Length: 109
Image 1 (cartoon, helix red, strand yellow):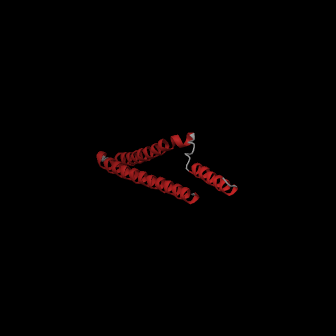
Image 2 (cartoon, helix red, strand yellow; image 1 turned 30 degrees about the vertical axis):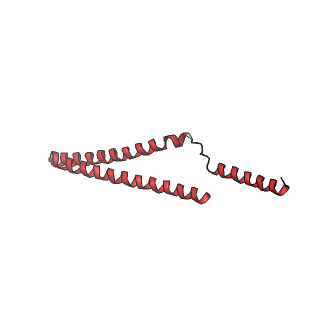
Image 3 (cartoon, one colour; image 1 turned 90 degrees about the vertical axis):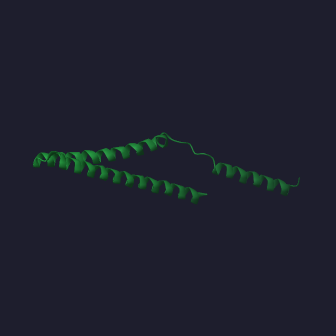
């Protein structure tokens, strides 16, 4: 084997090693492992907060006006709708962040 062939072979091995390194799985940190759970808890808390705020406003208005179930039901439903809307906005935000990470990884390759 000539020196030119050995140089080409060494260059090829170097490129293969670089390619293997580019697709090696990255190490997961403790934060990565619990990231999805944190997002799920955030969404649950947003929903519960909307319900509780709606309950509080509805109960307060019903107590004030003496019309017990009317405002309570209306504002609990409004609180639920607000909680779901906030959850959907959070989910959209998370998807946009995940898409940005994928785009950044593709740019690096």
